[in-house]
Amino acid sequence: MKLFKNIKSIYGIQALIDKPLRNSELNTLNEIHNAYLIVKDEKIARFGKMESSTFNEEDFSEIIDCSGKIILPTYCDSHTHLVFATSREEEFVDRINGLSYEEIALRGGGILNSAAKLKDADENVLFEDAVRRLKSLIKLGTGAIEIKSGYGLSVEGEIKMLRIIKKLKTHFNIPIKATFLGAHAFPKEYKENKEGYIDLIINEMLPIIAKENLADYIDAFCEENYFTVAQTEKIIKAGAQYGLKPKIHVNQFNALGGIEMSVQNHAVSADHLEEMTTKDYESLSGSDTIATALPSCSFFLGIPYAPVKEMISKNIAIALASDYNPGSTPSGNMNFVVSLACIQQKLTPEQAINAATINGAFAMEVAGEVGSITIGKKANFILTKPIKSIYYLPYSFGENCIDSVWIEGEMF
Ligand code: NIG
Ligand code: FE
Image 1 (spheres, rainbow, N blue to C red):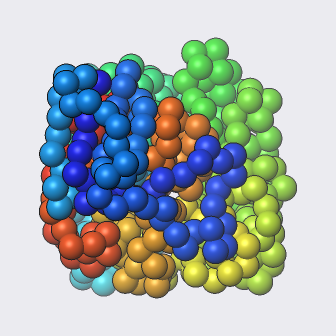
Image 2: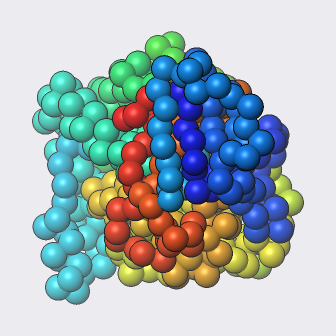
C-alpha cells in the first residue's frame, strides 16, 4: 500500500459514470484540498482530506509527501498515429515556403510518403521506435491511448502496423486501443481503381484483422481527395460485420456530410471537425458520438480550430486528443493540447482537462478503468511540481509542470 499525503489538491474526482460529461457538467473538476490518496493493488483505494484521515502511517510500504503539489488523472489520448517510420520535417519546410498540406499530399507527399517509408521499415525497428515514443508520452502524463494503423495501405503494411500495436498492448500496462485505418488514403497503384482498394480493405484486410483480433475500431479519412461519405460508410459497415465500431476522421478541410453518416452508424467519435455546418451541429447534438477536437493539428497546419465552445453549448459531448502523427501533428504532448484548447478554443481549464481525461476515456471506451480519480479505477495519475493552482498548468504553456506520472500506482 502507498500513501500520498499532504497533497495540495486532488482534481478530477468523479463517481463512476456511464456517459461522457456535457454542457455545464464540464465546468467543474471536483476537488479536495489538503488531501491524501491511498493506492492498493494498482488501484485507487481511498482518498480524502488530511484532517479527517484515520490511516496509520506504519501500514504503508511507501509514503510520498506531496506538499505544494497537485494530483490529477492522467490524460486519455483517444486519437493518435503513434506508429510510423520516420518524421517528415521536409514537408514542414515546404509548407513554410508556401505549399499547403493538401498540395503536398497531391504531389505524393503526406500520408503516401509515410506509407512508402513504412513499407521498407523493419517491424522490430518500428516497434522499438513506437515504444520509445509511448514512453515519452507517458512521462508527459498520458495514461491511456488509442493508436491507428493507416501508413501501411496494403494488406502486409496494415497488418504489420496492427501487430505492432497489439504488441504494444502487452508491453505497457496502460489501456491501449487499436484502430484500423486502412482507408487513410488511396495508394498510388489504386488511383484509377478506388473501388479496387475498398474491396481490398473489405475482402482481404478485414478478415485477417478479425481473425487475429488486431483492432478495436475502424476509421477512414472522409475528405475531398480521400474517401467520400459513401465510401466511408461502405467501409465502416463492413467493419461492423466484424464488431469494429467506427471512429472517423471527418470535416478536417471540408464538410461533406460525413458527420451525419458517422452519427447514424453509431460512431464512438467523430474527430477533427475544424469545418462545421449547421447540419453537422444538429447531427451531433444530443447524440452518443463524441466530437473529438485535435487543436495541435490546427496549430501546426495553421487551419481553423474545431469550435468546441459552440459544440458544448449545443449539447455535444467533446473530447480533446493529440492526433500525434509525422505529417500534421508531430507532438503527442497532451499538456500542450490542453493549453491550446484554453488559449485558442477558449475552453476553461476545467472544461479542457475534463475533455482530455474522462471524456477522452469515453472516446475509447475505457472510462470504467481510467480518466478520473475514482475509487476502484487504476491508480494512473499525474503529480505536478509545486504550483500555485491548477490554472497554472494550461497557463504556463510549454513548461513541464509534471513532477512524476504514476501508472497502476508505480512511478513511471
Ligand atoms: O489526422 N487527416 C488525416 N490523417 C492525419 C494526418 C496524417 C499524415 O499527414 O500523415 C491527421 O491529421
Ligand atoms: Fe488523425
